Image: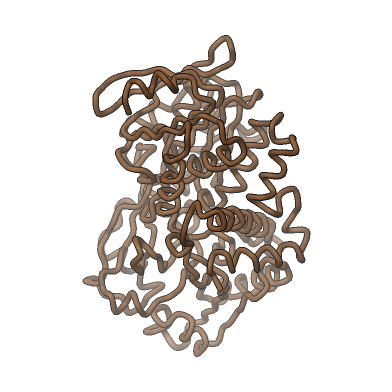
Length: 499
């Protein structure tokens, strides 16, 4: 970027911090809603989508609640709560609506570049877990989002569904699985890059790599002073923006704190790192075609739910197992070891301490994960792939997640395993915190953000019409209207070439 370009756009309408799937989605939506908006995008790395959105950083599954058991907890009375699963399934359908719009408008040319049909399965063993999975299936299949789900304890059928998982298993072992053929694999790194490639070609949009947003302060005219450092040259610049979105992954917490908005008080972060075992044997990779999720260990975070996972990465089929959780004081994969300590402020120290005390089992679990040996990791893999050979797998580093810690009137502070959007009362700044299900629900999250931050515009007939063009079900409930949901799913499955 030249200095001239900076002078021309020193007072943009919108600043997006972070070049991940959230900023990409919001940028495209805003540009569609109001083409004359000026947008400046800043990314501290030299490539886009290299943190949370990258395919290897645990953003590869289209989280639709088909197979993720942590979205369907069993209650004390033995029943299974499916409310969160219904919500996430609905959100994913909305995301598919927007992606279909991108294909229809040729913003993205081929859906195969980022989304692939892959069956989603849940797999458990042991009498108690099998009983739970059956109850889960019976509860889910009554809802229209889960029509077509299959459940089986028949080992012959399970062998056909997932041969690697069943071969070598003890004959008398009690096992069961459910299967949903409507599952997908989504490469959010590719999707993010495609969206930014489109945005860069739009008038009034500039993307700056190797640029770090260092500070945010509010002006008297209610605009935001955005201080940026060019990491390549060391040059510092300042912009004035009407609206700022902080979509910087784990780094969002620091910038949110710098903003000083009252809504930021009490928020903290708990970082969780991860690793994958990646298969290097093409014959093994070819024999597995599914995302097979199991039950998480007691005290483990949702991002560490074990799964034997088929993914399409750079057009090539891959097989991953994990992720193995770990602890690091970094808030970003490419962050600083001082990130956690720098986030501790007078307003959040008590909630963070209280959340820490209440989550001692999680701390013990993470310590155990960090100290795992190569044989320990192989043993965990063999729970899902009994005949796995050590030489067929290599260890790779996954992404960094920062789970949200926030004030709680009853408990003082709680650790949240979800996604949180923090917005100023006047809607001039908003930040995305948290992790799972994250990228898969990026579209409905950004729609909600637009409704909060652009209240005057979003109620106009022009914006309403454009929102319904991007998301035909906008303003209606897919969870409450089975016919609309089925019609929507049929339409998007065709547009995204999933059938």
